[in-house]
Image (cartoon, rainbow, N blue to C red; front, side, top):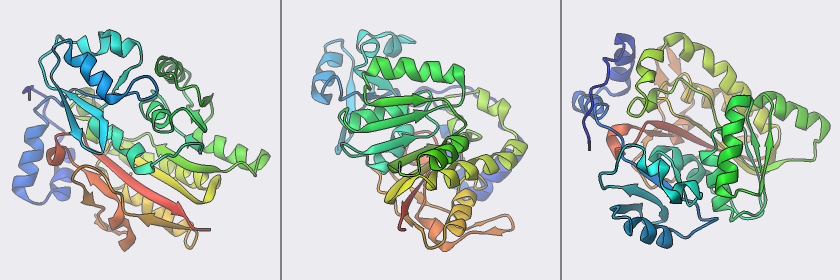
Length: 325
């Protein structure tokens, strides 16, 4: 693992992380791993090649490949030293045989468990890492609606879907909540089996791979985003099948954007939705039920917090909702 010299995090950020990680050793381990580059992880695109065949091809290039999770052989780490940008420039990447995807970013789709022939919505889809993963897991069957509001990001999404051969995907461009509301109004019979809401967030979990996050971190962002995040999830529930599953995920540690959002959704849809424990191939910590002067429902403990120091990944948060009515 390569060391690096990140900037000093802002004092308020450190104060908040100390509250989340009250054990001094745990907190120090967290700070130390921020100084280390994340592993070079890739995900095999099973639409085009099997994990075994891809591993052989990459090892023929003298790349040292490790398959980290036995149940998910498509997830690989390039352990050998390669030239900067080589993993992205490689022919196998250009051909769509694999997607360069951070380990924690792979987990929301694993939690969603998409099946063949299902109707799936990826509400905040760009740049397409999770959309292409959905298509791969569904073996190109069923239908995925990939929605993205930003035209610039939508172009990147389209490029990645084409490179990976995700032909079972329809791209839409609409504000996420507006998309759900419009669909409910004009096509109420169209309901999704699975929905992924990988919401825009403050990105606290990405400090290892994005030095910009240090400068961009702002408490006002954390205070303002939950309104958008709640709106996305609550709107999405209106077009979810009875017994359908919705995954809400962020790449931040901020409870306001995580447990706070989940708590609000559970209260709004009381009796119509339940939280399920998330089973993942990594160490997770349960959701917190107290933050500052707020208390959340006990059920929120079923959420999964993923910290960088626990699995040598980025930070993530995942909640799994199931509609019961």
